Length: 417
Image 1: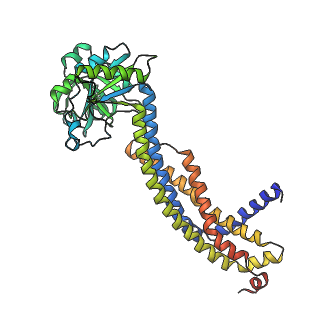
Image 2: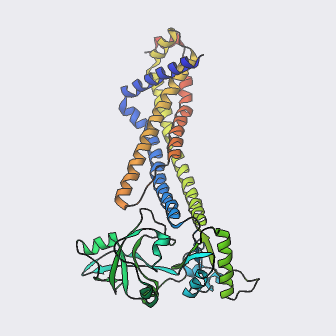
C-alpha cells in the first residue's frame, strides 16, 4: 500500500471518527474526561515546576555561573538546627572576618557576609506581611542583579557602622507608601526604625539561597546587631571569582583560607560547606524528579481510568453501529479496515482529550501565575509526551472493541436489529 493511500485512508478514518464524536457529544465528553483530568493535572504542576526552574537558571545567569556560596550547613541536612548531627551543630558560625579573608584572596572578586530574616515592614500604620529582609553591603546587585528605581545604595561608612538605613523593594514601597515618595522617610523594619535611602527593582527572576523573595535590604551589621538571626541557616557568604579563575581553583583557595583561619588540622573535616549553583540546581532537579515521578504515577492512573472508559464506550459504539459495519464489509471493506477505523476513532477520542488537557493545564498554570504572582513555564517535551501518551492509551484500550468490530460477520451484521 502506497504512502499516499495510507495517508488518505487515515484522513478518512479520522473524519469518520470526528463525525462519530460529534454525533454523540455528551458521551464523547464523558469518555475523555478521565484523560483530560490526568493530562491537565500533570501540565499544571509541570508548568509551575518548569517556571521555578527557569527562575533559578535565569538567576544563575544573573549572578554568573561561577558564583558559589559558603554556608555553615548546606540545606540537604535537616533545616531544624536541633535535628542536625552533633558534628554539624558544633560548627562555628560564619563571621565577617572570614568573608574579609576570602575577599583578600587574589582569585576572588567579591565576597561578603550576608544574612536574612523574616519581619514586617511598617509605615504609619500600614504594614506588610512578613517579608525577607537581607543584610548585605553595597555590592548586593553584583550577586543578585536588579537595579535602583530611585535613591542610592549604602555607603561603605553606613555598612561599616551598621546605620539604620534601608533599601526597599519597589513592591514593598508601593504597598506601605502608596503615592508618597519613600526616600528620606522612616519605616519600621521588624519594629526597628530605619531611614529609606533607595528603592530596589528586583529582577524578574531571582535566586536567593535560603529561598525567599527580597522585601528590603539593610546593612549587614544592622541586621546582625538588631535582629535575632538563625546563624545556622540565615548566614552565608556569596563568593564571585575573578574573570578567568575556575570555580574549582577559587573553591580550593577559599577552602585553604577558611581551614587556616579555623586552625583545622589536615585530618579534620571541613566545618563549612561550599555550594556551587550547579549543586543547588542538581538538588532542585532531584527533588522535582521525585515530584514528577509521583505526578506520572497519578496521571497514569487517571489515563487508565480514561482508557477503560474509552473501551466501554467503544464497545457500546460497536454494538450500535453493527449495521454500518456489515454494510462496509459488504461494500468491500476488509477486517483490517474495520479494525483501523475503530482504533483511529479511539485514538482520536483520547487525543482530543490530551489536547484539551494540555490547554486546560496551561490555563490553570496561567491562573496560578496571576493569583500567586509567580512564574510558570511551558514544558514542550512533556506536552508532546502527554498528547502522544493519551493517543497510545486510546489505541491500547480501543484494541478489544476494534477487534470485536473487525470480527463481525457481514451477513449477521446486516441482519442485526
